Image (tube, rainbow, N blue to C red; front, side, top):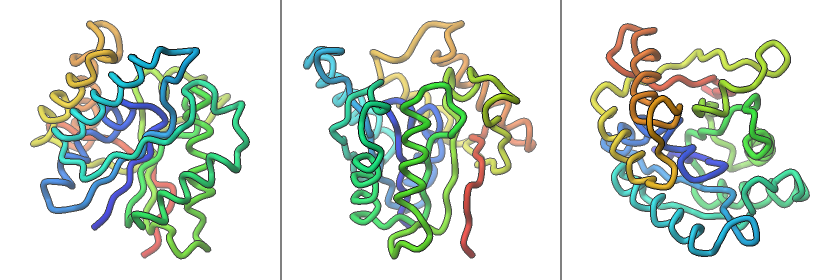
Length: 220
């Protein structure tokens, strides 16, 4: 089985899918991660961008990711890029790996980069494409998915739960590799809050820990 996780920025993939990545990888699946936008100058320094890449690769090694792809878009500027350009690069990634399962950010996230990546991912994964994945899930990202205005924007109501009870500590270890992103509690991007959300999602389905997703499409 091949799995592709599309992350708007480095750390989104760990926050939303980290435990699932670790589980699938240990079970023998090939897991790939594509990070769409990075911190390029002048908004960020080149040293920051290099550090972000190192942190992502370290986190992915912990999770068992087979390959990480960094696209060349600038973080927090995807709304200034022609939609077709983002579509094309994500489509090329799908074509390269031809995943069975695709994980994408949720369209209702407050960050415009997340919304654009969701739309471009669905364009790239249209079912009339020979490379279209049979299953697509949207994941939640702390401080992005839950900070939008419910009832005014799409509300994340998960209908798929993946048990990560045996992989929660691996997810937390991978998040610790993102030294520039992990925060101190009570910030949402803290180890305590990440663990709390996993515990809540797990308890919802009578499990110790889980990650929650919204099923976009399944072709059986």
